[in-house]
Structure formats: C-alpha cells, structure tokens
Length: 529
Picture 1 (cartoon, rainbow, N blue to C red):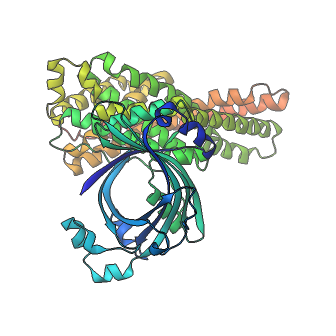
Picture 2 (tube, one colour; picture 1 turned 90 degrees about the vertical axis):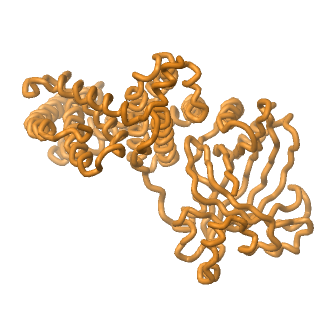
Picture 3 (cartoon, rainbow, N blue to C red; picture 1 turned 30 degrees about the vertical axis):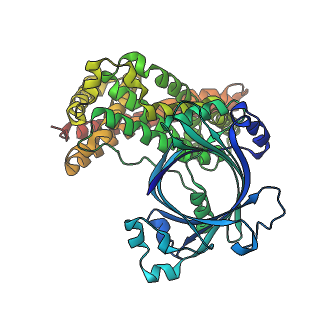
C-alpha cells in the first residue's frame, strides 16, 4: 500500500485561465487534459466512511474535447476508457496537505473488484459477504482535469492538477474547482513552495476537505459544524522536537478546519475557533521558545501576531453584540439611545467581520498558512540551531514539560499575589499568565496521569474562563464608547451612561466570583508534581 501526499487548494473558476497561464504550469512537461468520472461506494449506514475508508471507482476517459460519451455508465460504451479502483484510508490533513494510505488497481468495470486488493489488512476488511452485498454508489464526481508534471528541484517531482466539475449525491450537488499538488518524489514541503509561487497568479484557498469528504457532507445532508480544539498530539516517548512539530501541525489543522465556515459567515463560532487555534499556535511558540534562538521563531511569531490582531477585534464585537447587548436592550427596550447604540454596534460588527474575512482570504493570510505548513514539514528551524541546541530538542519532551509547567505556574502565582486588591490591568496580566499555563497543561497532559490532570485542568479552566469573562466586562467600556461615538443628544448620552454602569456592575459581580475561583485553583495540586 502506498501513501498519497497532496496539497489541495480551492479557487474561483474565473481564475482557471490565469492559473494555467502561470509560467510554472504553462511550460511544464507532460501536460494533458482529460475528463474523469468517479463513483464512491459505501453501505447505507456508511460503514466504510465511519471506519475512515473511501472506496472509489474512477474512469479515465478520452482527452477533453473528444466526441466520446463521458456520461455513459457502461465501460464498454467508451473505447479506450478504463476503470481504476482506489481505496484510501487513514491519514490526516494539515494546512491543506493530505496524507493517506491508498491501494490502487486497474479493474474491468465500474463495480468493486475485491480480488484486486493486494493489501492483506484491507482484503480482510472487505472479506465479509454481507458488507459486499450492501455496497452501493453514494457519491459521483464528474470533472475535467488539466494535469502536468513539475520538477522544482533535483529529485523532486510534483503532479499539478486543476480539477473543474461537480460532486453529486442524490439530487444534491456542489461545484468543485481546485488545484492539487501531488508529491510523487522528494520532500513534502516542496508542494507548499510551489503553491506559494502560484499564489501570485490567483487567489488560492487552503482546503482541508477531500472530494470524498465534500461528497459525504452532501450525502448525509448534515451542515458542517465548527471544529473544536482537538486532543493534544503529545505522547510519551516523543522528543521535544517531535512534540513541537505535532503541536504546530495540530493547531494549523484546527485553524484550517474552521476557515471555510468563517469565510461563509455562517456562525460566529467558526471565527472563535480559528482565534483559539491561532492563540494555541502562538502559545506553542512561547512554550517552546526556551529551546530556540529568538531568530528561529521570529518570522512565524510576527505573522501570526498580525492575524491575531485582525481576528481579535472581530471576536470582541461578536461577543458585545451577541452576549452583552441583548440583556441591556431587553431591559431598556424603548430607549432611543440604546436602540441607536445597538444599530451602531451592529454596523461595527459587520465591518470588523468583513475585515477579518478579507485578511483570512488574502494572499497574505493564505500565504501564512502555506508558509507555516512548509516550515513545519521541513523543520527548517533545525538549520538555525547549534549542535547543543539540536541536542536539547532531541531530548525526551517529558523532561522539558515539567520545567515549563513549573515556570508557568510560578508566573501565575506571582501575578496573583495580593489577589483581592488587583486592579483591572493586573488582572489582565494574570489572565494572560493563566492562559499560558492552561495551554501548556493541555499540551503536556497526555504525559501524566489522566485523573490527576483532569481535576487540575478543570480548576485552571474555571480560573481562566472567569478571568476572561471579567475581561469582557472591562472591554464593554471601550466598545460602548466606540459604538456611541458620533451619536448626539440627551438620549445618546444617557445610553452611554447606562452601558458604562452596566459594565461597572458586571465587573463588581465578576470580582466577587473571582475570589472563590482563585482560592479553588490555589487549592488544586499540580498534576505534574
């Protein structure tokens, strides 16, 4: 069984010509354009899909533009057409790079041929007569593929394919227009390098979903939901370098999984989860910073800071409009000033969301994802380290974890000293320290006893969430001032006073609640001791 490695990028069909005319593709070797017809099989209960398996039969027909009937379901109806049976399983997608095991063979018809499976484990899975009998077509894809071979460096071979067509399941269908860069030989980071070059020709969007995944979403008629934080990939036996790489890639996968939903403007939770992924990624950089010279992490840290600064205000306006304003507007339903503030806040929220979507979809936003994907795949930071520093990165991560957790807890304790008298700015600093400890605890928890880690992390989460709620109350003052800016008259002034008073009340209530949460946290025993 081989491993398929390909980078997937979506783009608007109107940019097909511009992409094809990019010098990298226009002058490439072995260019072909063909029509492809594929059928994906599964049981009515989607047993294969739920087991992480996709079974596809694909017909590669005559070159595009020929008069042969492409839509015919009978293989004999198209002279020269042949069927390729492909079974894909396992794998993952990180910043658009999909890596999956695949078993491929030429077969006579569009129906599964189980005798062609040459992998023992897969053959055993498909040995069930009952499973075979229940298989039926669930997805169909029809698209034109323009394909060429790239050789960006010695020993590197990448197949670049532009696919344009449709994905269908029943009466539901979806347009597909994507660029695939499949690494045939050489390092996987080369695919990111090529994508960054092609980004000059057309707006490309990093895509974490395969055609099969998109087809299954159509088949199940289940709307896509925001993806929450995945479990930490850190495991016993990893080196610090292994853990760092795995965490970076986990954060990139979390971010990318929510990107499409955020750009579609469907649910504010998508943006929230992207912001969480970005915060976690930045926390990975700061957590492992002691093992690196400052220059090694400076570029990714700077670019992720830019994106965080764009997404942060957008999230603030989402919270202000969705959580803070509703109880105020309910209480003062007939107040003209509050109504004006509400309308102004809605406009500011819309503008902030537009800015965030533009930034995420921009060449800079997508280039950041591609650059981080290539950077983490190539582990280029190793080139900037001394022999001693590389040695530290190759030590067991468990040794490093305890040092990090001890230092993070010490910072929280120091900033929480004289807790009862802390002013908002110092509570903000405590919140940041608690957040960093919380992320470090999440990253390294798999290295320790799960029961002990669970209780401590719960107490830490309550502290950080409560500090976050208090910070939201403080933020209300700034956002209320912004939303009421330019509004004139007695009603507007009164509304401003109402919002400021509401914020002060939230802060007072939060302070009383915080003391108990802080004491609970201080009483919890660190799970790494």
